[in-house]
Amino acid sequence: MAQDKHYDVIIIGTGAGGGTLVHALASTGKSILVLERGDYVRREKANWDSRAVNVEGKYQTKEEWRDKNGKPLHPHTNYYVGGNTKFYGAALFRLRKEDFGEIRHFGGISPAWPISYDELEPYYLKA
Image (cartoon, rainbow, N blue to C red):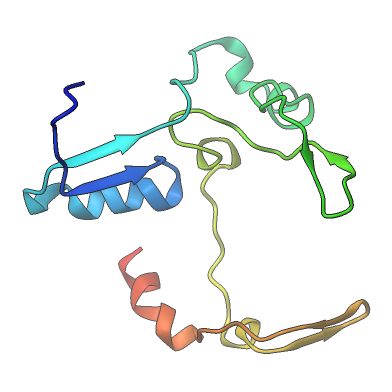
């Protein structure tokens, strides 16, 4: 890649957010660069084995992260074209108006979101 190449938009990752943004901007005539951390998932029989993919973590990164107390954890993260979205099936449920408010539950209180359902509704309609 030439060092002097300039882009109007640089998108990092082709998961749910990046892929959607690429689609929205594709017809604008802008020069777009998409950067992806991983490669394409190989076509192989194990791709269709839900146990191998979701339980055994066939495609998960082997990275070790640490929580705020320094305890190691292994996130369910996949570095491939399409990001984690490629592995979880892209199923997102529409939240309800009451989901955005403060929620009291056994473990305490989950604070209200800083945005409302009404602010998101136009995007739900687009999707």
